[in-house]
Each structure stands twice: as C-alpha cells, then as structure tokens.
Image (cartoon, rainbow, N blue to C red; front, side):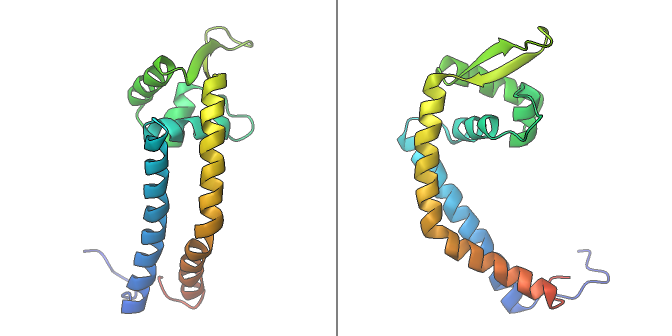
Length: 148
C-alpha cells in the first residue's frame, strides 16, 4: 500500500467518501433500471446521451462514442451496430469528408432519449440535494486539509 507522505483518512472521511459513492451508485442504479424498463440496454442510453450531448466541435464518430463511454474502439463498433439494428442510430457519411462515418440519432432514438432524459431530470431534482451534500462534505474537508 502506497501512502508515503499522505495523511491517513479518518473514520469521518471514509464515511463521507462512502456516502458520495453511494449517492452516485444510487443514481446509476435508477438510470439502469429506467433504461431497461423502456426496453433499452443501459449502455445504449449512455451512448445516445453521449452522442446528443457531445461538446461543441466534437464529431459524432464511433471514436467519440468509445472515448465518452470509456470503451475500446471495437467495442464501440459493436455497440453502434446493435443500436443501429434497434433503430436508435444510423451511420452517415460526413459532408466534409465522405470517408468519415458519423453516428446520428434516428427520430426514434431522439424520442427515446428525450423521454429518458426528462425522467432522469425529474429524478435528479429529487436526489441532487443528497448527492450535492455528500460532495460538499468532501470538498469542505479537502479545503480544511483533509483527504490530502
């Protein structure tokens, strides 16, 4: 175990970290369950959101999907293949360079994502205070010299 030069964590710090992780995991469990209830694999929902919410200037390529979901390129290819078969996305040639393939949401993909996103926003409106409180506790302790 490498702890050279670091102050050990207190019981309270472990509790704060555990609470923050619990709140994140709680939201992710909700997200996975609601995606499955809509007949979607959670990773499909994540990919739809990643594509729709790409930062300005980033093209919606399979490489971008891989990067945003922390996947290997070949895994992202398989994911996009399955989503394309499900009618959620389509591959299109880029206008600027026809050799480049872009991944675009279909109208069905847009509809599914909009519904899931509204449901997620409602859940966050309810659970954000607990998540925010857990994060603030860690930030506050870090500012006081803990978690260093």
